[in-house]
Each structure stands twice: as structure tokens, then as C-alpha cells.
Length: 116
Image 1: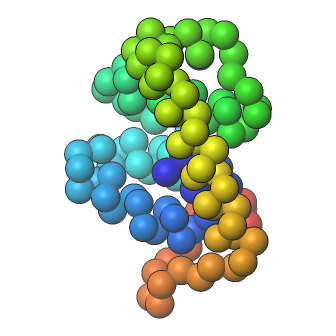
Image 2 (image 1 turned 30 degrees about the vertical axis):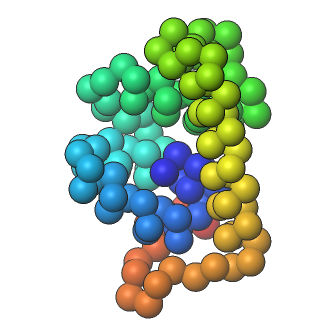
Image 3 (image 1 turned 180 degrees about the vertical axis):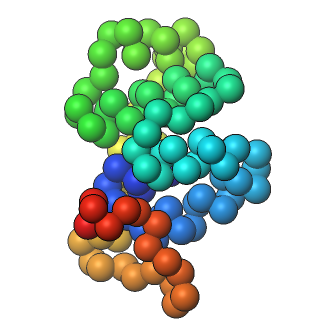
């Protein structure tokens, strides 16, 4: 969801946000991500993943503090996987955006119009 939001990809957001809610991510967290606000995570692992992915997408790198916090939770192999997934989702949303992949009929634009 972080990549779909940061890259303004409504199709991926529309596809993934309902699943996040279904699998227990609180609505306040989903809404904060949609609005590019700091999500009120209850679990440190969720915050570490979000912060790492957000920083990597927005700064194209991560600070030592962000990296070390996630590394302590997920280990080196987990960090390689998290970085790969972040890059893969960035590629997916860029491809969907570049080719103008539309929202399904009847779906509403999920991002604030000010970001359009």
C-alpha cells in the first residue's frame, strides 16, 4: 500500500486496501497511509516496515537508524526480501501508471485531488 500511495497508483490502492482491512490492519492506519500521514501503528514490526519502505521510496535510500531498526527485527535475509519487494511494487505501480491502467467501473479515486 505504501508504494501505491507514494506513486499515486489508484488501481493498486483499490485492490489492496480492502485486503489490509480484512486481515486486521486498522482503518486508521489504512487512512493515514492513504493521506501520507504517520500511521498509528500498534506493532513495532509494522512501523519498521512502513518506515523503511516509505523512506526508501521517498529518499531513494534509508538512514542508518531506519535500517538498523528493521534489521534488528527481520535479519539480513529479511532486509534483502523487504528491499526487493519494495522495488518490485514500485515497478508495478510505475507500470500501471505509465500505461494508464484504469480503476474498475464504479470505483472512486482514493487520493486527494490536491495530489492529482
